[in-house]
Amino acid sequence: MRTPHNEQGPKVIKQLVGMGYVVVSHNVDSGDSDIDGAGNPGTQAVIEFDKSISHHRGASPKTHSFITLHNEWVENGHSGIQAIVQKYRKLGYTFVTVGECLGQPNPKSWYRVRDFKKLA
Image (tube, rainbow, N blue to C red; front, side, top):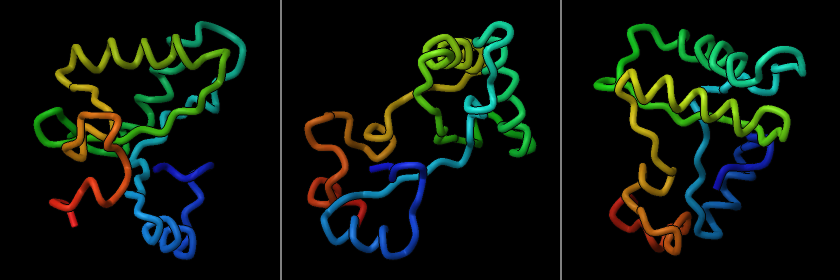
């Protein structure tokens, strides 16, 4: 589970873990919430994402992985994510779901600790 607005104080984490959830966060904010209505949203999304990735010096698909935070803004969401995926696939990155990152490709088994006994 990714907590709403990425609010995850210790009490929230403890409660969610107690309920059997695996709590995930991001290590890259895509910057898509900073995109305004001017210009091409796909191009702007790539520019903002590049800025976020630049904080990870020397990042490469062989040595780095990222969990990104994207806001589901209707105005830029689809074209922005599509543009980011196209660019970073060409650089060798692979895009997967959080479940796949945790070794659980079947959506029916996502996010409950009971399904991740190997990780505990």
